[in-house]
Image 1 (cartoon, rainbow, N blue to C red):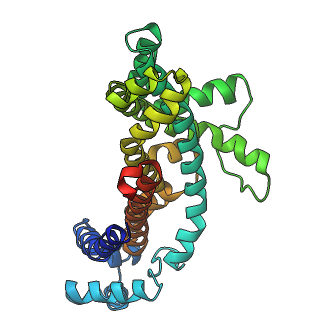
Image 2 (image 1 turned 30 degrees about the vertical axis):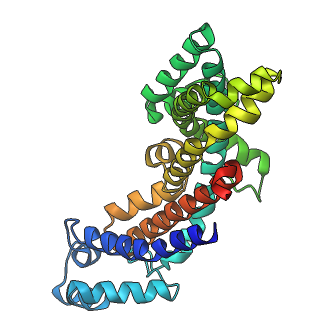
Length: 313
């Protein structure tokens, strides 16, 4: 097991190096000159030249990349050219919002998707199976922004139960925070729940037909023990992988959902930064997102050893 994790950790460093090169290189393909945009409408040549020198835009691309990597290794992701704030401070300001939204959305997805997949697999060919598949099809086919608008019209405009938009810190008012987050979290979790349901159903159908499940039933074990203890545990491996990837997607920022509900998270931050040609912020946010993806995949590998005894041997 230690050898396996050592190999996994050894792949993280070259992966991050490649990702950093990709992030920095693709960023340079965006149209427009940041110095010209920041110089204002007059675009004074002296101001543009000063900004080129300040942002190292007049130097070769490999040298600019080395400047950026050196800063990242020192904990400096750069400074936003739009508001003169450190990128790390902006990331730390927006990250808790996105993390909270992602965790609540994933809780919705797990609470809905996995039980629906189990019920669908156990009742294969019954009305419960068809109902679960209809739910999955609905979840996969419904656009997030459309569902969000409908929920705002119903629960905010018509019923007045929940706020239509905005964000309140949980440290200021926990109740108001949960009220503001429940609708966007459900919108995001709904689509993920549909995906989890389909994968759980597929994995459970394969496991329920295995010999050891038939043996467990032949020994007289109760059906809930057979399904939850023997079948589900062995079907969790692909579900863990999918859950880690979906959580990484949520941490990268749900752009449309955050825009609909005015959630000040990563999605809104990166959209504003792209429109403003704020290269440092875009690079910092994408690098943090890529690191989160890699970390979650490593955690998923660790979870495999907890649910699958064969890997521990």
